[in-house]
Amino acid sequence: MAAALLFRDYQRTGNMEPVMNRSTSVVYPSPAPKKQGFGLPKSSSSRQHSGLDTVVQPRELVASLDPKSIENTETNHFIVVHGGGFGAWCWYKSMSLLLDGGFKVDAVDLTGSGIHSSDTNTITSLAQYVKPLTELLEKLEDGKKVILVGHDFGGVCISYVMELFPTKIAKAIFVAATMLASGQSTLDLFSKQIGPNDLMQQAQVFLYANGKDHPPTAIDHNKELVKDLFFNQSPSKDVALASVSMRPIPFAPLMEKLSLSDENYGSIRRFYVVTLEDQAFSALLQESMIDSNPPEQVFRIKGSDHSPFFSRPQALHKFLVEIAQIPPK
Image (tube, rainbow, N blue to C red; front, side, top):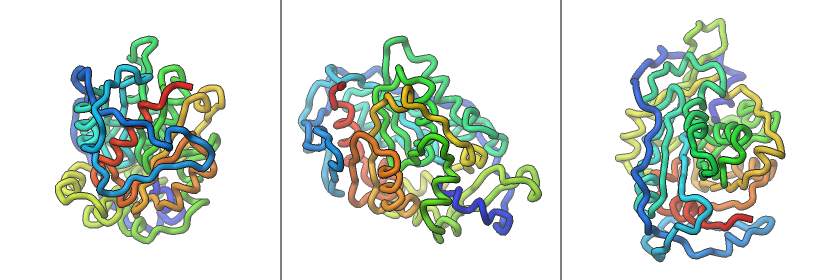
């Protein structure tokens, strides 16, 4: 999460009262998938080689796709993982499109996110934060695989479980997401690879549930600035939804270094979706992560802000389906 940029200056940053809210459910499962759906003819992007990528224009519509059975895909089960401050709610458009296409989708609220009952300020580790996701994968039927999709800090979360459950994950898709190398933390990535983000600094506020003489426990956002930061290309109704749904981001997981092995994490096929009009994770930052930790294939969405599930849902859907239909090696 880009909030890590501010750590060096947190003692000079104003604070606000910790937010405590909500309760109950953490996973939003889909109904039983339909037999038929929207498939995608293979584009040249599916025949990957070094440096090859695909760009979707802002007005490219899913309506142009031909109906096709999804029964021959490696798996038709997606698990979508939100980013820092977001919740399962942010995937409602993508879930609807995937369900209409015959896929199965689970959207998870990570600990202290969405309607999960935990107070964000009490989260002290990445393992605690991703527990709803690990529990979901633990319950997955033997022999079944899923496609993981992570947005923003959700990229770190899916990387963490890729190391734990390599045999249960067919593919991993990073959507404008933090994609770390082994031994790296989110704080390491953002403090070293990009300079100060003025808009981010204005939008974010540290929370100190343990007092100002201790490290921050969470980071919240100025609701007046989230549109320009995360949703600069998104419809107003989605901005309104986010403004009443976003919650603080736990700080401790941002500082935690990942331990990723070639045998587990490295055995899973990775794909990256770049958002080209992103004011939170610049395209330059996303390309830097791709260069440092190359995935199998890169896709780019023109006209997308940091939240393509709001601003360019059909273009994002096109890529999700295309990746799902790439045959096993």
